[in-house]
Picture 1 (cartoon, rainbow, N blue to C red):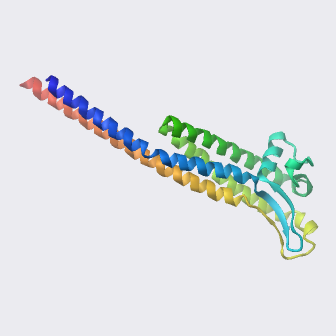
Picture 2 (tube, rainbow, N blue to C red; picture 1 turned 60 degrees about the vertical axis):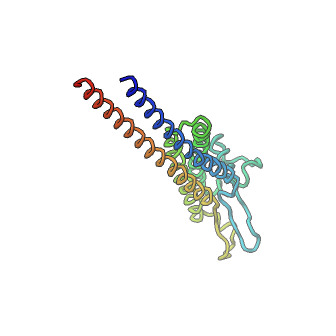
Picture 3 (cartoon, rainbow, N blue to C red; picture 1 turned 30 degrees about the vertical axis):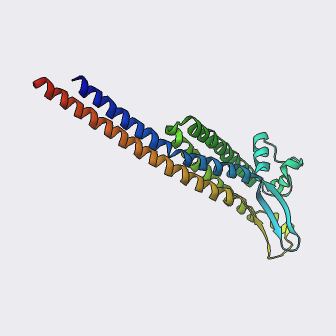
Length: 226
């Protein structure tokens, strides 16, 4: 009887050990996701909206951090260097678009940073159950960055082009926010692969534990009958 219990205990320990080893092999996914998420944060230094004129190059521009600063301080009309050319012409001619772009960008940035914090906890503390939280943060952030790109390009319908382009057909409003959006989607995909693999691994572990418990109960019942 004691020998059988010892075997059952060792079997459970072996299954648990294999589970921990397999779960540990998934941790690099979150390390890669952290690196990608940090790249997304750096991308906020890119031109979130700009006017390009083939005769002069980039005439006016405002970065993602310019919009983050403006949205967090509710000050879109400042001429400080940190805001770039946000006040003039973008906020002056496209107030509604700028405020929308600011709100979307700030929210996306907060979600990006939150995803990095969660991923660090997942990677360092091995709290892989939290990985689904970071996936959700990253996915929503990716969508918001795509929205930011659309809103920025939508400024072409305002008066900005008529002021800066002077009829030049090679003059346009552009935005590089599509780049962090694509990188963010890539990071979300990496996290999702790791999270799904972990979910399947955990389900398999629980199944094995349940099967072992069922087998142990049957063995005990047979032993009692004898």
